[in-house]
Length: 166
Ligand SMILES: NC(=O)c1ccc[n+]([C@@H]2O[C@H](COP(=O)([O-])OP(=O)(O)OC[C@H]3O[C@@H](n4cnc5c(N)ncnc54)[C@H](OP(=O)(O)O)[C@@H]3O)[C@@H](O)[C@H]2O)c1
Image (tube, rainbow, N blue to C red; front, side, top):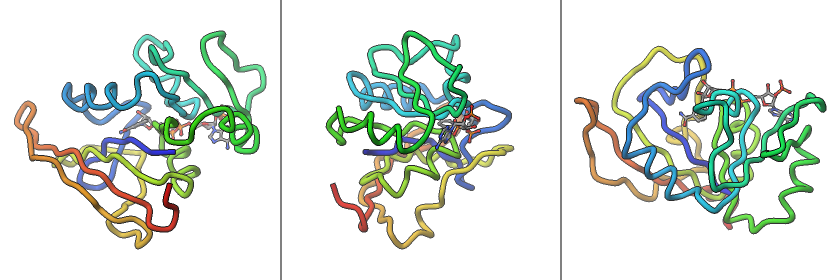
């Protein structure tokens, strides 16, 4: 599986249940990568989706301990064990971990790659991604061109997990 995330200069990812920034080009990249695939997220991220609706044209899997939590349009897993059972149905390359902090931290060891949009700004944040530059298991393998949105520079980067290769 792969992680996909947008981080600020402190590897912040969210604040008060929301994203730090919405960059249209990054949203487009996210859509390109994930449409037709499986997106895996925690309940907090699921309830923060626009309109409270699952992401269209993707199989949405949501981790949530509450067995009462259900929705016709999503698959709910109440433990990592249950999740790994469910994921056996799909090619691992097609599974994208899309957040948030808790779920990234739990599943990053199982990710072979991470698509990280780096936003060159500092926001007020209360949720963070693991700093991959300080993690010896992870290696930066590509950095896209530096672009700008509303005066904020950002670039699309890719890391690989040298411990777990796909
Ligand atoms: N920048 C980005 O790319 C990005 C992407 C996604 C999200 N975000 C941000 O991240 C923040 C949300 O992150 P978060 O850490 O608060 O929440 P989260 O990771 O989205 O969801 C956490 C919840 O998922 C459930 N869960 C997690 N692991 C589980 C397990 N092993 N078994 C069963 N249930 C499990 C639990 O729900 P229950 O408590 O219901 O059991 C837990 O409270 C928001 O601010 C969001 O905007 C940023």
